Image (cartoon, rainbow over the protein chains, first blue to last red):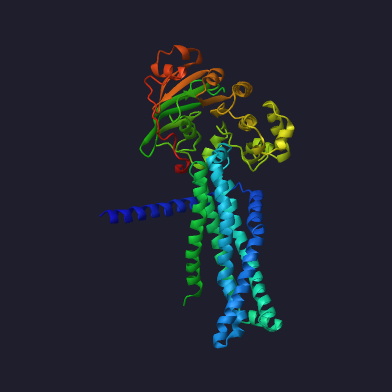
Length: 257
Length: 270
């Protein structure tokens, strides 16, 4: 009987959390439609997410592309399909590894910093102070971050795609003995618009998830340094899990027949 | 205000708020008349902050009514609420300065964000307000983290009065300051309030501060106002609770709940 009760409690708290996040999202979207807007804040968040994440995302992408070329070459050599390396690299990067790995990196970087910043603002009553200065915290804090996340993640992923393919190219040409022109040709020969597009859609969704989790957990941070720490952990972990779940769902949407 | 003298600036009736099983406000009544300076005293965790935050709309009360200038605010839409909020200024206990913004941007925040004033003009006003609390223009360029506690309080005060609000709330204005700086802040509060002609509601457990800034003192205990009267009468109330509090005695009718949860968690707000 206790066991059943435990499951029930777990389910109730799960749905409670889902409901709270849904309400938070609803409020944030509702407030984002009406002025005032804060272009300066949106721009600052865009730079933070898009520009300052470039090094870490670029590094991730180039090594992923390189590893992918090496691995698929040695794997495909078992059935003499080495020529497929370029195609495998470009499709894996654009469809999956570009968006997912970039999102995981950005979740660690941006999700954590947003939760910590907004959490500290909550704990030191800065969010209450916003309200007393006739400024809606959803508009001032949440909306610019969500918007920047949705807008900048696809840009980041596009860059990651290019760098990733370039990483594969470097290994293919310099180490695996591909002819540069032939490698490039087979990279683009079988690439479809849908491959890149689905990756960019994923990126936008992941950008939304990362910033939403950062804002939500920061906004509902409990008291003290420990509260902010917990909020940061929750923001990153929940973003990572949601990214993996939504990655599957979007893939299903695009590619299941 | 010429509207009419009978309508209180702030009128609170039957205000109730509980966090889980802990009842913080239990049918609290309070009137603050226009131009009056009321100080609420009471122990830690007796609901003083919650009362202020209910009036400001930061916490949604469970029951009761709050009227500002005769307007019921507890069931207002967020947009109307923002309009009423423009009448308010608040000095937070920890200052609550925005640490990503420079001092002058903090002071002029309400002018720029809520009133849409140009930044150049707002900066001039910010510097004037900083001067009013005894800080030079060079302080305006600093970040809040670079200031001492007393300076942060002054900046927070400058921010609270920058929009020239009709009603100002002070949450523990002297907590964490040395006695001399406390007195400086008290003087500044009295001066600013006199100049603006504002109505003020303060909470404190610093009696020296209360005696200095209050016209009227109200004591909160167990979620209700148990005594209220002019500041001159605070020493002759004949109320055992008030007596125990102002003399700081551990023995008396007020039982200190050792180990009780002081305040609600901020995460449980709307």
